[in-house]
Amino acid sequence: MNYRHAFHAGNFGDVLKHVVLLDLVAALHRKAAPLHLLDSHAGIGLYDLASAEAQRGGEYRLGVGAVLSDPAARRILPDYLAALRALNPELDDTGAGLRRYPGSPWLLQRSLRTEDRLTLCELHPEDVQTLKHNLGRDPRVSIHHRDGFEALRALTPPMPRRGLALIDPAFEDENEFATLTRTVQAMHRRWATGLLAIWYPIKDQRETDRWKRELAAPIAAATIAVELTVRPARESRQMNGSGLIIVNPPWQFDDALRPRLDFLKTRLAREAGAGARIETLVKAA
Image (cartoon, rainbow, N blue to C red; front, side, top):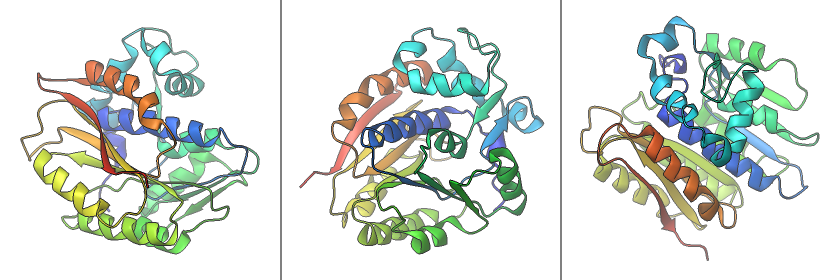
């Protein structure tokens, strides 16, 4: 419970996560039926890039900053850029004017329609209070001070049943991958139609691939993994990339995402051997 995302806001992992998340929500909004969105490890929802925490590592400069420095971002990532501009009215085409970075709760709240619902969970006692302050009073949003894994088991299937769960733990516990695997598999048994988006760091690619196979083995629905590495993923002592496992991805989702993923690889690569891929873990029935 020591993890504070303020040190890492806007880094390459955030960029991938948020680009994919916005595409998923846009696909769900193609139908008028109400949605229930869940974020299991919400953080504070909104980040000040001028803060001491963000400035200490400056990770956003090689993440969102690198994306915004390319004029093509406006064409390739229109939803992502629209969200950043909504939060930073002075943002220009060079990336100047970026002052605040949205967390996934802010992006999800912004996407809500009248009948949609959003449930946010955060365990850190200070962060949950900041989250409530940052998102304001919105009758469509419920904020819980509770463990995200416990909440996912207790709150699914949600009402309405159509929806998405974003699962983005801190991975500060050595057993976190095992806990995540058990939680996702249990959720899928109870909520077979739910769209699940599970973010994960990539250190050693072989270990990551083994874990993905283990998680996906009992899943009885189409499942893909979207991955971006900024350097070859051979050094297990550092974060070399990140990915999202997506259970029940929208129809033709991978085709729509592929050009965005290729663009992100070009902008976010730090060494030769950076990569981007969309991998099928479970084929559609």
